[in-house]
Length: 218
Image (cartoon, rainbow, N blue to C red; front, side, top):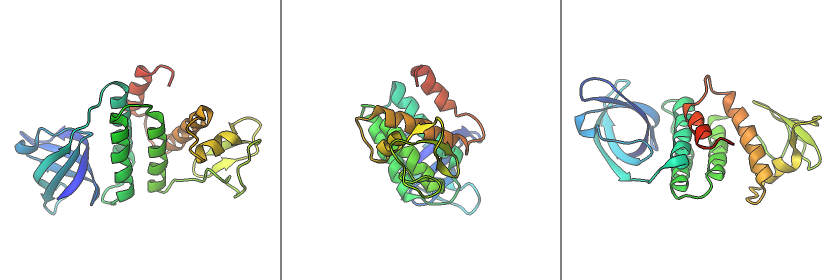
Protein backbone atom coordinates (compact mmCIF):
# COMPACT_ATOMS: atom_id res chain seq x y z
CA UNK A 1 0.00 0.00 0.00
CA UNK A 2 1.05 3.58 -0.60
CA UNK A 3 1.30 6.40 1.94
CA UNK A 4 -0.49 9.62 0.96
CA UNK A 5 -2.12 12.83 2.11
CA UNK A 6 -5.46 14.24 0.99
CA UNK A 7 -4.97 17.69 -0.51
CA UNK A 8 -8.62 18.35 -1.36
CA UNK A 9 -11.91 16.47 -1.50
CA UNK A 10 -15.32 17.14 -3.01
CA UNK A 11 -18.59 15.22 -3.38
CA UNK A 12 -18.78 13.31 -6.64
CA UNK A 13 -21.85 11.10 -6.64
CA UNK A 14 -24.12 9.80 -3.91
CA UNK A 15 -21.88 8.39 -1.15
CA UNK A 16 -18.72 8.97 -3.22
CA UNK A 17 -15.94 11.54 -2.95
CA UNK A 18 -13.33 12.71 -5.42
CA UNK A 19 -10.02 13.01 -3.57
CA UNK A 20 -7.03 14.99 -4.78
CA UNK A 21 -4.13 13.21 -3.07
CA UNK A 22 -0.34 13.46 -2.80
CA UNK A 23 1.11 9.97 -2.81
CA UNK A 24 4.69 9.14 -1.90
CA UNK A 25 4.77 6.57 -4.69
CA UNK A 26 2.70 8.16 -7.47
CA UNK A 27 2.82 11.91 -6.79
CA UNK A 28 -0.38 13.93 -7.13
CA UNK A 29 -3.47 12.23 -8.55
CA UNK A 30 -7.25 12.01 -8.16
CA UNK A 31 -9.01 8.93 -6.79
CA UNK A 32 -12.60 8.01 -5.95
CA UNK A 33 -13.46 7.07 -2.37
CA UNK A 34 -16.65 5.13 -1.66
CA UNK A 35 -18.91 5.15 1.42
CA UNK A 36 -16.46 3.15 3.50
CA UNK A 37 -13.76 5.77 2.96
CA UNK A 38 -15.90 8.87 3.39
CA UNK A 39 -14.62 9.78 6.84
CA UNK A 40 -11.13 10.88 5.87
CA UNK A 41 -9.39 14.10 6.76
CA UNK A 42 -6.76 16.29 5.20
CA UNK A 43 -3.45 16.88 7.04
CA UNK A 44 -3.31 13.28 8.29
CA UNK A 45 -0.96 10.62 6.97
CA UNK A 46 -2.98 7.94 5.22
CA UNK A 47 -2.24 4.56 3.72
CA UNK A 48 -4.21 2.97 0.95
CA UNK A 49 -4.49 1.08 -2.29
CA UNK A 50 -6.40 1.99 -5.44
CA UNK A 51 -6.90 0.43 -8.84
CA UNK A 52 -8.41 1.20 -12.21
CA UNK A 53 -7.15 2.39 -15.56
CA UNK A 54 -9.18 5.56 -15.97
CA UNK A 55 -8.29 9.06 -14.74
CA UNK A 56 -9.94 8.42 -11.37
CA UNK A 57 -8.92 5.06 -9.88
CA UNK A 58 -11.16 3.57 -7.20
CA UNK A 59 -9.84 3.39 -3.64
CA UNK A 60 -9.96 -0.21 -2.40
CA UNK A 61 -8.39 0.18 1.04
CA UNK A 62 -7.68 3.32 3.07
CA UNK A 63 -6.69 3.88 6.68
CA UNK A 64 -5.24 6.67 8.81
CA UNK A 65 -1.68 6.10 10.02
CA UNK A 66 -1.35 9.14 12.28
CA UNK A 67 -3.52 11.97 13.56
CA UNK A 68 -1.86 15.31 14.24
CA UNK A 69 -3.44 17.95 16.49
CA UNK A 70 -3.89 21.24 14.65
CA UNK A 71 -5.55 24.39 15.93
CA UNK A 72 -5.36 28.14 15.51
CA UNK A 73 -2.56 29.55 13.41
CA UNK A 74 -0.84 26.16 13.10
CA UNK A 75 -3.95 24.84 11.35
CA UNK A 76 -4.00 27.76 8.91
CA UNK A 77 -0.30 27.27 8.16
CA UNK A 78 -0.88 23.57 7.50
CA UNK A 79 -3.74 24.46 5.15
CA UNK A 80 -1.44 26.96 3.44
CA UNK A 81 1.25 24.44 2.48
CA UNK A 82 -1.48 21.97 1.48
CA UNK A 83 -3.09 24.53 -0.81
CA UNK A 84 0.30 25.26 -2.36
CA UNK A 85 0.67 21.59 -3.26
CA UNK A 86 -2.87 21.35 -4.61
CA UNK A 87 -2.34 24.41 -6.81
CA UNK A 88 1.23 23.89 -8.01
CA UNK A 89 2.06 20.18 -8.06
CA UNK A 90 1.93 18.57 -11.51
CA UNK A 91 0.06 15.28 -11.75
CA UNK A 92 1.62 11.84 -11.87
CA UNK A 93 5.15 12.99 -11.05
CA UNK A 94 6.51 11.25 -7.93
CA UNK A 95 8.48 13.53 -5.61
CA UNK A 96 9.66 11.55 -2.56
CA UNK A 97 11.82 14.42 -1.27
CA UNK A 98 8.90 16.87 -1.35
CA UNK A 99 6.60 14.28 0.23
CA UNK A 100 9.09 13.89 3.08
CA UNK A 101 9.37 17.68 3.45
CA UNK A 102 5.57 18.03 3.59
CA UNK A 103 5.28 15.34 6.26
CA UNK A 104 8.14 16.87 8.27
CA UNK A 105 6.58 20.34 8.05
CA UNK A 106 3.15 19.11 9.18
CA UNK A 107 4.76 17.36 12.14
CA UNK A 108 6.70 20.51 13.01
CA UNK A 109 3.62 22.74 12.81
CA UNK A 110 1.58 20.36 14.96
CA UNK A 111 4.40 20.25 17.52
CA UNK A 112 4.05 23.92 18.38
CA UNK A 113 6.74 26.58 18.32
CA UNK A 114 7.28 29.19 15.65
CA UNK A 115 5.72 28.21 12.30
CA UNK A 116 7.71 30.60 10.09
CA UNK A 117 10.94 28.54 9.89
CA UNK A 118 8.95 25.46 8.91
CA UNK A 119 7.05 27.39 6.23
CA UNK A 120 10.13 29.03 4.73
CA UNK A 121 12.07 25.77 4.45
CA UNK A 122 9.08 24.03 2.88
CA UNK A 123 8.66 26.84 0.35
CA UNK A 124 12.33 26.49 -0.63
CA UNK A 125 11.89 22.73 -1.07
CA UNK A 126 8.70 23.20 -3.08
CA UNK A 127 10.26 25.69 -5.49
CA UNK A 128 13.26 23.42 -5.94
CA UNK A 129 11.03 20.40 -6.55
CA UNK A 130 9.04 22.31 -9.17
CA UNK A 131 12.22 23.35 -10.99
CA UNK A 132 12.10 26.99 -9.88
CA UNK A 133 14.80 26.92 -7.23
CA UNK A 134 17.45 29.64 -7.14
CA UNK A 135 20.77 30.26 -5.42
CA UNK A 136 20.96 32.12 -2.11
CA UNK A 137 24.75 32.29 -2.34
CA UNK A 138 25.12 33.82 -5.82
CA UNK A 139 23.30 36.45 -7.83
CA UNK A 140 21.79 35.86 -11.26
CA UNK A 141 25.15 36.63 -12.91
CA UNK A 142 26.99 34.06 -10.82
CA UNK A 143 28.68 36.53 -8.49
CA UNK A 144 28.83 35.80 -4.77
CA UNK A 145 26.21 37.63 -2.69
CA UNK A 146 27.94 40.34 -0.66
CA UNK A 147 26.95 41.67 2.77
CA UNK A 148 27.06 45.37 1.90
CA UNK A 149 25.20 45.24 -1.41
CA UNK A 150 21.44 45.44 -1.91
CA UNK A 151 19.68 43.21 -4.44
CA UNK A 152 16.40 43.01 -6.30
CA UNK A 153 14.76 39.60 -6.60
CA UNK A 154 13.49 38.69 -10.07
CA UNK A 155 11.34 35.53 -10.30
CA UNK A 156 12.85 33.04 -12.70
CA UNK A 157 16.28 34.66 -12.46
CA UNK A 158 17.24 35.18 -8.84
CA UNK A 159 19.02 38.11 -7.23
CA UNK A 160 20.06 41.09 -9.34
CA UNK A 161 22.35 43.77 -7.99
CA UNK A 162 23.47 46.19 -7.03
CA UNK A 163 20.11 47.87 -6.37
CA UNK A 164 19.49 51.33 -4.93
CA UNK A 165 17.13 49.79 -2.42
CA UNK A 166 15.93 46.20 -2.20
CA UNK A 167 17.14 43.30 -0.08
CA UNK A 168 20.30 43.56 1.99
CA UNK A 169 22.91 41.01 1.01
CA UNK A 170 23.55 40.25 4.68
CA UNK A 171 19.92 39.11 5.05
CA UNK A 172 20.14 36.86 1.99
CA UNK A 173 23.32 35.30 3.37
CA UNK A 174 21.75 34.97 6.82
CA UNK A 175 18.90 32.91 5.44
CA UNK A 176 21.26 30.86 3.27
CA UNK A 177 23.06 29.94 6.51
CA UNK A 178 19.71 29.29 8.26
CA UNK A 179 20.64 31.68 11.08
CA UNK A 180 17.84 31.04 13.58
CA UNK A 181 18.61 34.15 15.64
CA UNK A 182 18.48 36.51 12.68
CA UNK A 183 14.84 37.65 12.32
CA UNK A 184 15.70 40.13 9.56
CA UNK A 185 16.99 37.29 7.39
CA UNK A 186 13.84 35.21 7.84
CA UNK A 187 11.58 38.21 7.18
CA UNK A 188 13.50 38.93 3.97
CA UNK A 189 13.17 35.28 2.96
CA UNK A 190 9.41 35.43 3.54
CA UNK A 191 9.08 38.36 1.12
CA UNK A 192 11.39 36.77 -1.46
CA UNK A 193 9.66 33.39 -1.40
CA UNK A 194 6.20 34.94 -1.53
CA UNK A 195 7.21 36.81 -4.67
CA UNK A 196 8.63 33.63 -6.22
CA UNK A 197 5.46 31.67 -5.44
CA UNK A 198 3.07 34.44 -6.50
CA UNK A 199 4.73 34.39 -9.90
CA UNK A 200 3.54 30.77 -10.29
CA UNK A 201 0.05 31.16 -8.82
CA UNK A 202 -2.84 32.29 -11.01
CA UNK A 203 -4.94 33.61 -8.14
CA UNK A 204 -4.54 34.45 -4.42
CA UNK A 205 -4.42 31.65 -1.86
CA UNK A 206 -7.45 31.31 0.40
CA UNK A 207 -5.32 29.96 3.24
CA UNK A 208 -3.01 32.97 3.13
CA UNK A 209 -6.00 35.20 3.86
CA UNK A 210 -6.83 33.05 6.90
CA UNK A 211 -3.28 33.44 8.20
CA UNK A 212 -3.50 37.21 7.72
CA UNK A 213 -6.71 37.32 9.76
CA UNK A 214 -5.21 35.24 12.57
CA UNK A 215 -1.95 37.25 12.48
CA UNK A 216 -2.75 40.81 11.41
CA UNK A 217 0.94 41.73 11.25
CA UNK A 218 1.90 38.80 8.98
